[in-house]
Image (cartoon, rainbow, N blue to C red; front, side, top):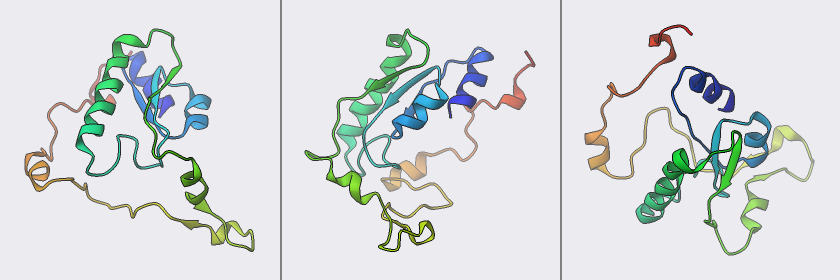
Length: 140
């Protein structure tokens, strides 16, 4: 994500990456990033926690103005739970230690977009008119 963000920024479009993987984000150094210490796949908050999701998005978007140091990663002040033991269950290796037998306890992934509410699905534009693709931009 950081590599793509830097390329987009080089074309004059500000970017901001949301991450739940601090070490990876730190390694690729995107221009601006926020870190949420939640399980992967929950970078914008918990399912069906609309108020929390709004707070996370408001704090994230505020970083367009507040993040003045390139490569800075701002940790958002939210906790998945009171204890960090949830991190132990994210990826568990079987007793054999064989990586091929690793169990992934995250929620299933889908090939089509999933919406929290049916109204969201109805309002979604399948051909987003505000999306910008690098191939459509003038060369640098």
